[in-house]
Image (cartoon, rainbow, N blue to C red; front, side):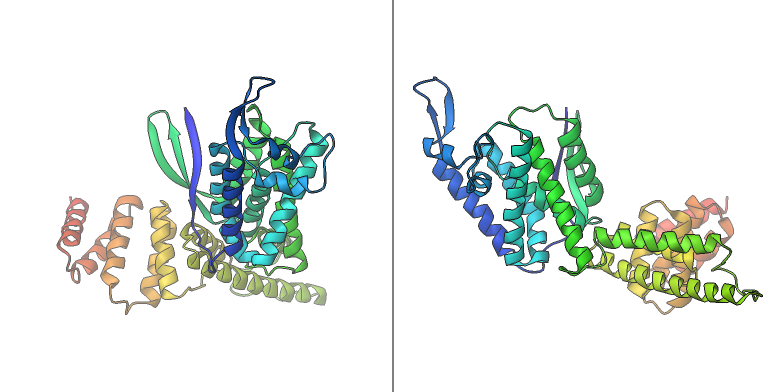
Length: 395
């Protein structure tokens, strides 16, 4: 048995998502009005909905215009509506915040229409449910917040736990590719409506970001694409002979080369400025793994780059927790060099001592930092840890 289910995201909307709440409430009210399990006197089959619902379902053979909206507010069971409304709440709140109330309502209804069209073109069976519109919202979330973290609950035989996965990977692979392309075996599931909804959500958001209809926050998929393109251009320039790490550049005899060098320097400065902005955005969103990755990218371009004190400390701690001991030690070293007046500097020295002792096999530096930390440490537990490390190093 293997169950995977998202339970929360790492960001919260800044404003109350009134329209998303209203859509959820409308779906619940309509479901309660329409749900009524009964036995069809002609067929003997158990039917979950009242007879009047039939005219509001989307019937591909002969669809009416209103059905492209009405079908998205109907559900066939409690499990059906609970699942759809949970995903709408999970991903829709932040999309609502980004698009505004009117924009979000228009987008949601557009997603319902587009997913209904997709189902009509690919299937002849009647359909109901908000899953197509919810898929559009989920696709929009992927584009707007691709590197936010989704906490995922999983149950694998006897193992039950949670794990954090980037939205880009979880939505792109699990929800879109795996659930709708690989595992298409569940009956009464409108897979084509789902894929049409995802397509509408992703393409619409990329188009709106690319044209400036909605403001890019420097952390969306469109920004990632532009960053990749800039880095590709930068790598091409470096491949042509420009060395951004050289202390002194030898003069080129041809003036065209000199212009090329200046352009590369400007591109490097622009790229670093963009990465620093990304780091601040990731930290504001409490997405430290992404911030740490951006930091490593920045120092790979320019090792002398320095972040504000708290940002550098947060990233050094994150690198240590990620098992990147060498990179973490370098970040702590830089912190010691530039922020030596930090009130808890002994904590940094202790961390460096442990890193050099346990993971980097540099006993000389380990003894140095542990000895310095021991002079200022006040916590008895930390003092004991420091003594134990020093004792092991001296054996």
